[in-house]
Length: 177
Image (cartoon, rainbow, N blue to C red; front, side, top):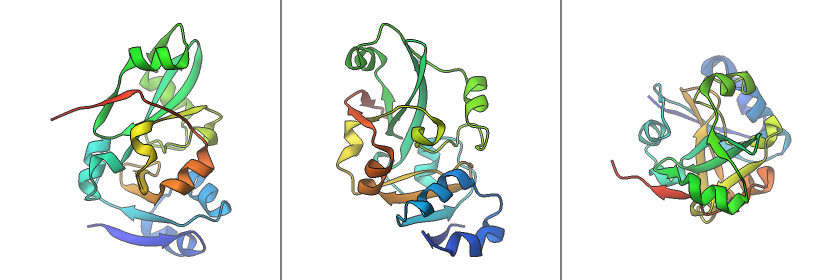
């Protein structure tokens, strides 16, 4: 069962007991930034595509953060749930010598306040540069894991872009199931 809760002021505090242990880093950041967002609860979703299904959202509106290592530095990539990173293209666009995926154990060390695989696409909250795929840029909204496999946040793309200020590149390709 999905519960839609309008947040952005005291609603998160009022319903915190109902929702359980909320990933407070992202919600506190959104509240301090005074942006409107929706916090939802759903059954466990362990992939971005599962989240899209649980939230009844097309995969193109669900952001999938992927942590990569670029020439020895971590970078958060944000792309649609229905896409994968073209590493060769990304490497070229970043002007990098080396681009590779970060091991899960290292991701868990960086995102200590999140369930593994449920990281929000806010690299700036973790001192990580963020690159976003161009295919997301013109969407009116974005949906993403809120730090747990059972919670999601939906907000306008305009607010997301203003808060995160990602570098926008064209580095993903659509995957058909």
